[in-house]
Amino acid sequence: MELNRDLRRAISAIKTYMEIERDAGLDEILLPSLSLSVGVSSKSGKGLKERLANLEIETALCKGCQLYRSRNNLVFGVGSEGADLMFIGEAPGRDEDLQGIPFVGRAGQLLTKIIEAMGLKRSDVYIANILKCRPPNNRDPLPTEILACEENLLRQIEVISPKVIVALGKFAAQTLLRTQTSISKMRGHFYNYHEIRLMPTFHPAYLLRNPGDKRLVWDDMKKVMKELGIPLKK
Ligand code: URA
Image 1 (cartoon, rainbow, N blue to C red):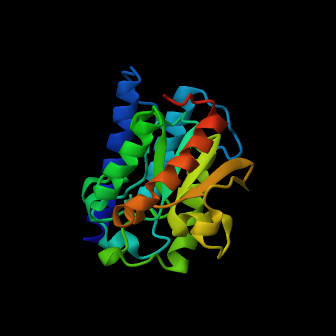
Image 2 (cartoon, protein in one colour):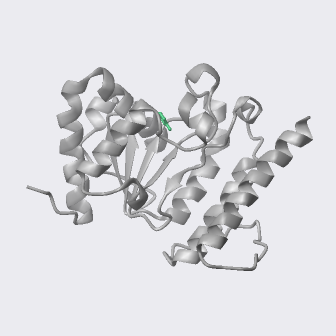
């Protein structure tokens, strides 16, 4: 049973890898090395796709915590591997776990609107979470789970090598910046995260409950747009 689950996960990750190769126009499959080249930050398309696919395979097989047992799907990340802008949320919810894609539920639809208001598409950015597997019943991630998943995220960030990271919500911001400072205090200011500019802002799920604070998030996104040289539409 255990072996079957692992095999299914590995096959699904390999399928993703082969689809990427096929979409890139390759008609033969080169077997990837599973060791990632840490520290390489070139943004050349094919190398990044391959490195990200390798990392997804490794993450699919990760047993660093117990969450792999209860998840339906790994929720690795989605978007452009060459993105200058990366959004990082907390952990997959029910919809994300069922589809294997981050931010596809109600909060995700609001995030999509925010991205589009910035003049971008979801496919222009990269979207991921701190945790790649859903905590049962959407409970808060445990410190041990965060620790176990941290390397997966760091390696993912290393491949994407974005110019700006937007940390969505208290949990992502506090985890990435190793602080207990409240999100209300942090949002709206850039921080340095491994030489990458990081902007904490409110989580879209919070905005669904507090729509009055959407304008604050928009203020934060305007700062991000300025940083990335994205023009503001009048
Ligand atoms: N909330 C998150 O933090 N991440 C998701 O993928 C969905 C909802």
